[in-house]
Length: 140
Image (cartoon, rainbow, N blue to C red; front, side, top):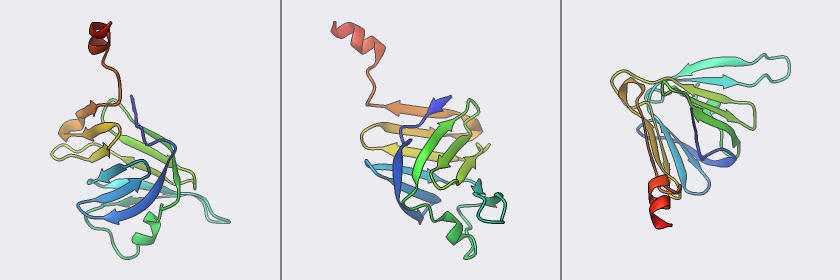
C-alpha cells in the first residue's frame, strides 16, 4: 500500500484536459485518465450514490458532479494492484482501477516526486523528498 502525499491538501481547481485533473495546494496535481467510480455523499433524503465517469468523455450532466474545488483530500492511497482510492472532506470518494493497456492515473508533486499506475497495475514511484537509506548510511 502506498499513501499519497496529497492527504490534507485542498483541491484548488478541477479541469478536464487529457483526463480529470485535480490541482491541489502545495504544487500537486493528480491526473486521472481512465474510468473512475465517483461516490456522491448522501444529501437530505437522497442516499449516497456511485457514478461511473470516464474522464475522456464527461457529459454536460456529469460535470457538476466533479466540483471538488475547496474540498480537502482526507484519504489518498493506492493498493498493491495499483487501484487509487481518494476521500474528500465533503464526503465524495473517487476510486480508479488499473488498466491493462494504459496509465490509469498520475500524481505529480513539485516538492515530493512522481507516482503513477502504469499498465497492468504496476505502480511507479519516484520520490525526491525522502531520504534514501543507502544514501543516508553512506553520509554518516
